[in-house]
Image (cartoon, rainbow over all chains, first blue to last red):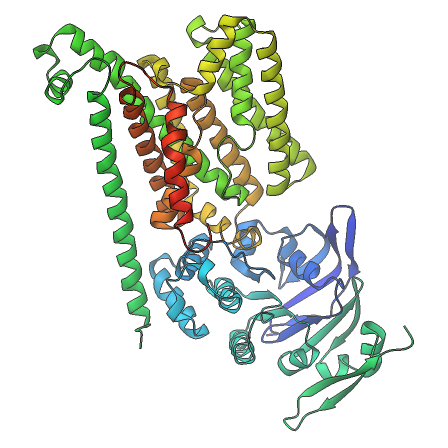
Length: 260
Length: 350
């Protein structure tokens, strides 16, 4: 049996009177893989992610197996998709643990008997058990981001959509978070992650989708999608794409491109 | 090193829950004491024993005392509590759906709309056709407060606005109705003007059993829905996008909240006029005591609001012997310094 796939065809989405992505079709996103969405600012990465997560009205098709995820009710969508927003509110007077219990209570699929155990398990996996009972307004930016990631995965959705999940994290935590995402998709789930750092994306993603001005520019395994020519065209920089001693791709920017 | 095992977290959380229940119980006990004290206070000097005798054994007391307790103090004391519950709950929901700590039931112009409704009845005698004269002012206040909120909701639905748009439109309504009230004050007779000003200061002296019954029905109808929305409202504190991503229909939640807020506020204002501060302070005190898990935050807000109103009711009768100070003045005068102390003494965010 083929693994389940997320297929996005001719998807358009945007904001009131401002279309951002038009008619975009993506290569199938397979279960068990991390797919990185990259591109310059205002390329439409977050808009695409938010449209797929049902947070923006969208036209077109997005099929997860046989399910059309654009037509699901909010509750059914929440059961299927775990979304992590780019910004995490600072003011919440809830503890990290309460945030997780709230997410679990509202997720229809959760077994209501073991909420607390599930919440503590996720906190331990993310290494933030010691801040479980801290109010979120007392946390650092990085800790809030980890708490937000915990809320996204605690109900164990099949589709994980993360909007810049490591932007406020130090190197160690960036590595730990992506390790967790890697473990998460190994169980037959899908992760679509918006990232800015191309070396980081190439290190962790099985496939990379490069977007520009709401359109798909390139897609495939990092070594195929990320090329100096493509980066010059999309970002306007002259760069080298090299392999480090561990075998991972590295993007080194030399200068701004003259021909842009 | 700190013990951070899963079992330790769960045990600590259960301890927090027990602490919150204890705080709620303590507030309830204080409220009962404040209520009994409110019943004993008033211009007619009745002691505790007279009051308790009139309540528990009316046949053993004189008719004037029974009348004072049952027809004047009891409805007023109960009204104070119910108004506190209504305004604090409305304030708590308003602060959550607008994500704004400064929000109160009056933020979106509800009080101004109610005042305009009352002013129409008092100054021009215009009211809902067929309504008894004794309900004219209250009926108008309720109708205009509720209609203002529905108008607001319609505008933001048509324009697809979020919390910021709601606040902006609310401020526009606030100034519009204030201007209309000022216009009516300008053309009002001396007597009508005095009556209107007294209404706008807020007073428990208008309370009677009939109005209290109406108010109690509104509260009994609305509060279960408010408490049922505790989890989605808690989710909203995690951010609108997060709430939506975990299945909360934020637009529907906001609409339902606005309907509940307008019903509670309109009913409270129809009964006692403008009473500020309670809707702002009740939720802040609750947040300070037990955080923002709305399963506890909403009931503790209601208890805090009721306690403030009950204490204010006693103070309004005792501050100046022989004079009943409008309760709206009392809540502002005694409440604001307490509120400032609470806010300034607090660490961290709201």
